[in-house]
Length: 220
Image (tube, rainbow, N blue to C red; front, top):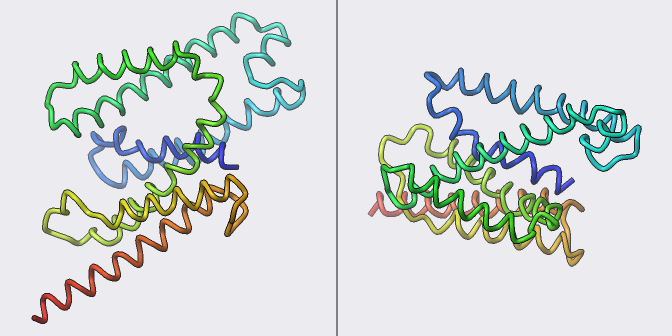
């Protein structure tokens, strides 16, 4: 479950990168709901059924066994192409944002070279472990974004650049998820869910303290 969530939650976290040019929030909500809520599950089910029936580890192996070698090659090439382009786009935006740079081309080249070096290092063999790591590290970020979205939806002032509460909540969630994954202690039995629960509780508690301190400052 954690590996599946890890592969799925990446698209949720970087979805703002793809909806940044949508003209209305309603359009972004519709596009996200159709792509992640309808199309993605259908694609996963469509790929999972033949692999399950044939007992193969992936769709390309199943297509090859059925005699569809050329379509299997097309699926492999285009899926890798799409994934690489999506990662390069979002990664370059994140790097440019952190460096406060308006030049995206150097960020694209740098991210592409780093990604190529990592791939050539043979890290693909650790892909499942990588998905498990994403399943622990990324869902807490989604929880923080959702909580902040509700908290700051009516704010007119700029959000502070550095805020310790989300960092503490993220770290606590990852520790809880890691402890669950290592079978040390678990709240729900699933590492991803443990990370979500702990992060949400810490974030909500921190927000409560911030609002309380803010109210005391206004009273003074």
